[in-house]
Amino acid sequence: MVLQHTSGTRLPAAFATCVLACLSPYAGAAAGEPATPAWKLSGFGTLGAVYADSRDADFTASVLRADGAGHTQAWSPDVDSRLGAQLDLRLGAWSGVLQVVSEQRLDGSYRPQLEWANIKYQLTPDLALRAGRIALPVFLGAESRKVGYTIPWVRPPVEVYGALPVSSSDGLDATWRWSTGPVLHATQVFAGRTDQNLHNGLRIQAKHIVGLSHSIERGALSARLSAAGARLDTAIGEDLFAILRGFGPQGNRLADRYEIRDKRVSMFSAGMSYDPGPWFVTAECGRTRTDSLLGGGTSAYVGAGLRRGALTPYAGYAQVRADFPTHDPGLALEGLPPPLAAAASQVNAGLNGYLATIPVQSTWSAGLRWDAATNIALKLQFDRVQPREGTRGALINNQPGFRPDHAVHVGSVAMDFVF
Image (cartoon, rainbow, N blue to C red; front, side, top):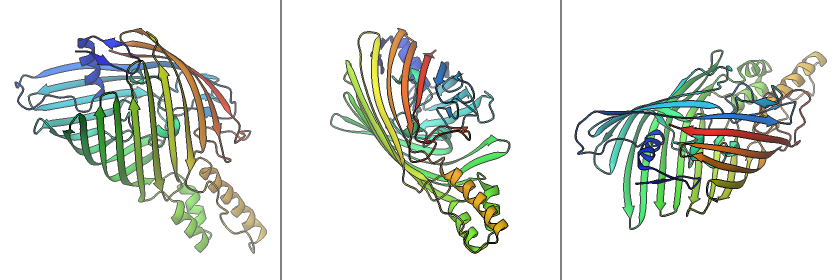
């Protein structure tokens, strides 16, 4: 048995088993296997360094990071570096998985976080039930988005995957595997919630998460469609909304529109990958919507590469556009006394400062992957990141001198490994 991964290197059977256990949320014993307990420890990680030529904002892989490359420091190890460990336990039709990941958090620490912790029961050879903390099955690489070794590029495109910075939820799911001729199907329904403490008591809560994901495989082709919805709560901007409500009915209308309190959020994604071996192409698109300060947008990427022995040169393009206004006239200033008009103008500026964080951005990427060993890949990648429409794009920590619509050039080196 061998495993063909995105670089084209063929892995030995023992190592393939380890990687599959590390990556698959469906790893476990099939019904009918001997009830002999078996456990396995595996892991993954990335050691990376990123350079960005911006001095007025930070390039980062996620908005849930404290900083990145550019303003905070020209070279940053925090954008991509992480370490993960996973424990799998199997007992007949029952199995469990525990995965812990350490990466930079919003408070700047690398405090480990519980990524997965669930129990699965293989009800039939085709139907499995799980309960606990489970990867949200949204996007093509939902279960492996933190395992850099499994993808050709340094990181999943931030324009697409940044739309869902929360990657797991606490709840239930059921997966039914079936086939139509040569096409293999996996239909997954899921429900749950998530509650994360981001920093200094700031929390993000998603309640009543429900969704459906459907994956297909036929030879070199794989694809996934996903749809999910939830009710979102967070205190982001609450001081601004309190001030807005002090301006009477028009302030209340603005606060009701943008406040992130029990707001409906929906997400749809579709992705496909065709990988016959000597080359590959992958594409994905997604759409998010929430009637709040977080806005919504449509994102997409396409990437392709060629395999030449241990070397894989690749290139890609990604973009995200806002389907929600990134500017609002705010409070009407006409007829207000001068001191109150000045205060209202500052409140409007604060509101539009938040709206400017709704990303509108495009990125051209090119890179090279070298599979130096059966479990180590070295990567070099260059990106041209272009925020658009007066927003900061997916950058963070923008400073007063930040110029919207000004391209940022990014260079990344990374060593991905699994064990």
